[in-house]
Amino acid sequence: MKKILIISFLIISNKAEAYIGLGPLIPIIGSSIAFLWGLIIIVIGLFSYPLIKFYKFIKNKKKSNSDFENKNEIKDK
Image 1 (cartoon, rainbow, N blue to C red):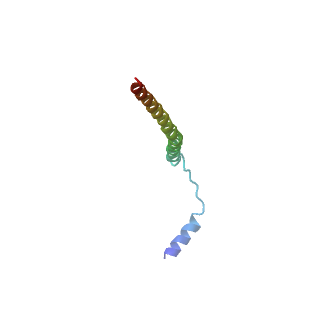
Image 2 (image 1 turned 90 degrees about the vertical axis):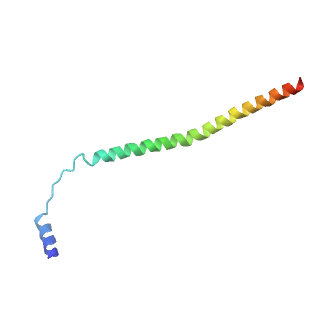
Image 3 (image 1 turned 180 degrees about the horizontal axis):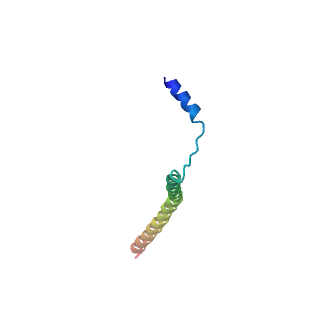
């Protein structure tokens, strides 16, 4: 019985004209924008994190050198 209904449906409805419209396009565009924004944030993070760490290292090194020099000056006096 099911086979007869499926075969008759396929024979009767051999032509389908449909308009999809913008409905599915809007979520695809939104998802693409969110994905690209996340990708940009990841790339910025990958490049900026080592630079920030290097800057802090240099800053701490200069601070420790100046502290060391100040201690030596105090000892020399």
